[in-house]
Length: 81
Image (tube, rainbow, N blue to C red):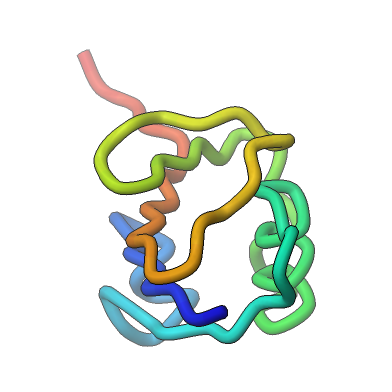
């Protein structure tokens, strides 16, 4: 299956782009997607536990199965006041 991954803030720098396309195996969940991204972008390792995911505009938990053709956004930790 093919998905689009959107990157925000510091993740844009890590990915080298604001969005990338990925091919995933059927049945891949959010945790599996993060595994793939970390393998491709090892710099993610230090912030991975803080990342949040959304699929097609709705936040998901790591065990949510990714749907073919989806747009998955990866949000890094945010700070501010």
